[in-house]
Image (cartoon, rainbow, N blue to C red; front, side):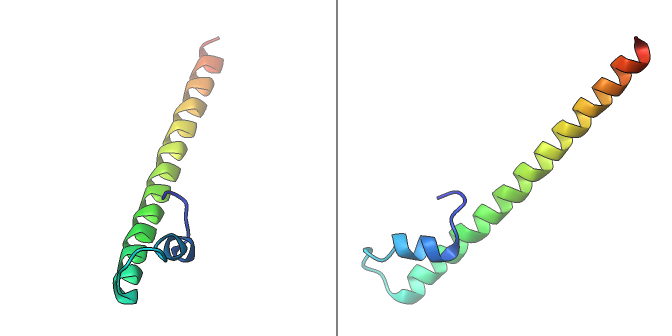
Length: 63
C-alpha cells in the first residue's frame, strides 16, 4: 500500500466489513506509515547523493 493516499486506502477497505471509524483508523495508520517511509527514503537518497558528490569532488581533486 505504499504511496497511496488516505482516500485510496479507504476505497480499498470498502469491501471489508468493518465500521467506518475502524476503516478510517486503518487508513490513517497506513497513510502515516507511508508518509514516514517516503520521508526516510528521501533522506537516504539525499545521503547517497551527498556521498556521490563528495566522492566525485575527492576524485577530481586527487586526479
